Image 1 (cartoon, rainbow, N blue to C red):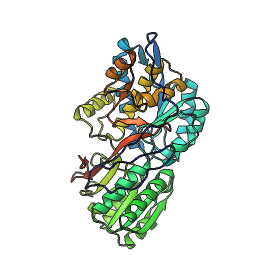
Image 2: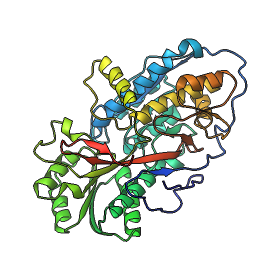
Image 3: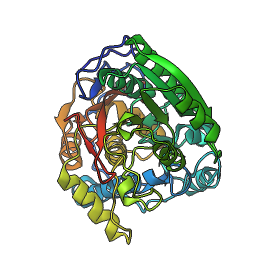
Amino acid sequence: MSVFTRSRKSALVGVIALAGASALVLAGCAGGGTGGETSAPPTEERDLTLKIGTILPQTGSLSFLGPPEEAGVGLAAAHVNESAADTGLTIDDIVWGDSGDTDNKAYSTTIQTLISEGVSAAIGAASSGVTKLFLDDAVAAGMIVFSPANTSLDFTSWDDDGLYWRTAPSDVLQGEVLGNLVAEDGHENVAVLYLNDSYGTGLNEVFQETFTGAGGTIVEEQSYNTGDTSFDAQISALLASNPDAIVLITFDEIFTIGPALLSAGYPAEDLYFVDGNLKNFGADDKWPAELSLEGAKGTTPAGPATPEDFQTELNEWWTGEGNTELTDFSYANESYDAVILLALASLAANSTDPADIAGKLVEVSGGSGDGEKCTTYADCADIILGGGVADYDGYSGPITFDENGDPTEATVGVFQYQDDNSFVRIDV
C-alpha cells in the first residue's frame, strides 16, 4: 500500500508507484475546522426523526449505478430503524428521487422536491457534473448534500458552507491507481478516450500525469461530449495510433464504444475501464453476448472487499422492495456508510438540523482523532449515548473526513473481466 498525506484544500502530494495489482490507499490527517468538537456527555434522551432523500441515477448515462446505491441507502436506513427503540432516532420515509444526467436534467425537479419536503440531507448525486448543477441550490436551502460517488477535485474547495460531504475519494486517487496499473502491466504507448466533463477531464489529467511519469507515452487522446451517440471518428483515431492499450473514461456510452473496438479486432485484454463504466456486462442485454471482455481491467473506489453477507443483505432489502436482484454493487458500500454517518452525526448533535449534523460528521468519522472505533451503527450509537466519541469505520473503509468533507482514507480496487463478461476483484 502507498500512503499519502493530504493538506487543507490541496491535492495529493507526490506520486508513488502501485505495487503489483494491489489497491492504493489514501491516508491523512483531518483538518481542524468545522466538526472538530467532540461530544459532551449526554444530558437528555434522544427523540429524533431524521428525514433524508436521494438524488441518484434512476435514468441517464449512470443509471446502472442507481440500484446498488439506492439499496445501500435503504439497507442503512433499515439498520438505523432496527435500533430506534434503543437510540431514540428514526429515519422517516425516504424521499426517493432521480438525478438523471446532465442531458435529461431529471435532477432539476428532484432537488426542488427534496427542498420542499424539508429533508435534512440528500444522498447523491452519482455524477460530479450533475451535483455541480444543483449543489448551490441545496446549500442556499441549508440542506446537506452527501454523495457516495462524486470524485471531482472541484468539490474540495467548493463554497458549500460545510454542507457538502462524500464517501468516495477524489479522482486524484483513482487516476494514480489507473496510471500505475497500466504502466505495471507493461504498456508503453497508450490511447485515451474520455468524456469531456469535469469527471472525465479530471480523471484523464491525473491518469496521463501518472502514466507518463512512469515512462509511458500517450499516443492519442480523444474526447466526446454528453449526449453524443456516434464515436466513429474517435474510435478510428484511437486505432490508427496503434496503441498497446486503450483507456476508456466514459459512462454508459461504453455500450457503443466497447463493442466497436472489439468488433474492429482490438484485444480485450488491452482495454482499461473506470468507475463510470465498470459494470457486469454479462447480466446486461445491451452488451452483445458474443463479444468477450475477458482480460480487460478496470478501477473503481471500492473500499475493503465487500463481505458476501453484506451483499446478501443488500439483495434481500432490494428484492424485498419488489426489484430484480442486484448484479452490480458499485458504490453500495459508500451509499450505506453515508446514511450511517448522517444518523450518527444526528445522534451526536442530538439534532436533525442540517448544520448541526454537518458539525458532527468529522467527529463520528474519526476526524477528531480521539474517538472509539466501531463498525456498526448500533455499536457506535451506544458509544455516543454513553457520552463517548464514536469513530465509525464502515464498508467503504475508515473514511475519516477532513474539514472539506473529503475522506482522507480510501481504497481504489482493481478488477478484471472473466469469460462471462462479469468482473472480479484482483487486488485482494
